[in-house]
Amino acid sequence: MSSSAWWRDAAIYQVYPRSFRDSNGDGEGDLQGVIAGLPYLADLGIDAIWLSPFYKSPNKDGGYDVADPRDVDPRFGTLADAKELIEAAHSHGIKFIADIVPNHFSSDHIWFQEALNSPKGSVARSRFHFYDGRGENGEIPPNNWISIFRGPAWTRTPDGQWYLHLFDSSQPDLNWNNPDVAADFEKTLRFWLDLGVDGFRIDVAHGAVKENLLVDHRDPERLIDALRLDFLDISEEERAGLLSDVPFFDREGVHEVYRKWRSILNEYPGDRMTVAEAFVYPSSRAARYVREGELHQVFNFNFMMLGWDAATMRASIERTLAELVDVKAPATWVLNNHDTPRVVTRIGGARKARALAMLIHALPGGIYIYQGEELGLPSADLPDNARQDPAFIRSGGTDKGRDECRVPIPWDSKLPNYGYGTGTPWLPQPTDWAQYSMDVEAADPDSSWSLYKKSLTLRHSHPALGGEGVPTWIEAPAGIMHFTREPGLEVVVNTTDNQITVAVSGSSILLESAAGSSLQGGQLAIAANTTTWLQR
Ligand code: GLC
Image (cartoon, rainbow, N blue to C red; front, side, top):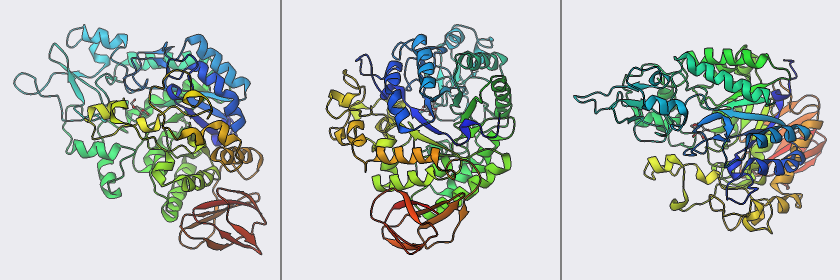
């Protein structure tokens, strides 16, 4: 790996294939739909796509319940379609990142079926976490853990044993102490690497290894609150306390797994990469996943959780960069994904979301864009009877779940279902989404899509954008973030609702997230909730 490997400052676009584009009219997106969308993604200026799972799956958790990690679910197409997609992406100059799910399989996986049909204590059962229950007749689960989707983390089988599932009961957790598990994942990594994928996003990367499996947790309900990426009604202090020592997350043993995975990737040519979904706390724990000889990137969820506040964002940026410099890994910046509210909704409107995007696009390291973010889509309102997320179902509706950010995206304002496909979309699209359709936004120089395109283009052409290192911070009035990057870039972010005048050294405005600022005689009067890039 050279120090200028492509992924270190790439713009990576997350495709949630079920909601991207439906080529066969069944109301669900598919791999041919992704192929059809590639020219649009190339035009936008992204460097890579990461696809959420498209493997064989009963689809109880949007494909994160994998029944065969080395085959494609017929809903999405065939293995031949996957090969065609990887090649088509490459022919557009776009890298391809697959998703890998080491924490659990689907209960439809052949191993779990075998385990159910095998006796207590069998090898087949030891690939998962099967235990007897407590109580006189074993009727009480082995411990009090609850599922991240709510409800017990254990389900009882007909012969009386219980199995662990941190997510839905259809997602039994794998036991990484059984060598079959490691061997099977190595086979899966090689299978997709041989097909030409450029990397992997690792689902729940911090979860594979558990400790103290039979010990109760002191406050399992509150722990799950603290683990939710969209649950903000919890103080930093409480979150820190709860997340400092979780028996099923961030155990030392996971690092050994990833050191092995890294050595496998290193056997392949072409800077193959990994990115960890490891929501661990504090952020210094996340940096441990990208130490030398381990993974390449880790999503920066600690930054994603912050509100639109200059002082806390700056502190988080400085801390992230310092922690990652120590381990020689580049930073990542992410505003939302298929598990969180969309950034427009979370941060309080499209104007702030655009300014926030231009802030992270100017920072050193890589950026992630979740499909539809470039269109400025808000989370969609959905009637409860349309919701399908197991988090909604298992919580009895107290948790609304993640469907609102998974609604099929709009391509063409003039076509049925906004051009997503001819069949009825699996989640209903809002009636006012024509305004966000790609055709409308591409024709409007002031649209969110046009802003993303300009900013991604500048990230390729401007010598100070992308790359690594640390920005030079300039002291600024409250509510303003001000920094420079060499050569020649100055960035000013106004997080307040008022216009503020800032002394700058830049001589012209390169790009702004909204109109309304003016630059004269070294003074930038920057409009409310705006980010401005200046050329020095
Ligand atoms: C990850 C995925 C999420 C899924 C969960 C269980 O957090 O991003 O969508 O539900 O893992 O696999």
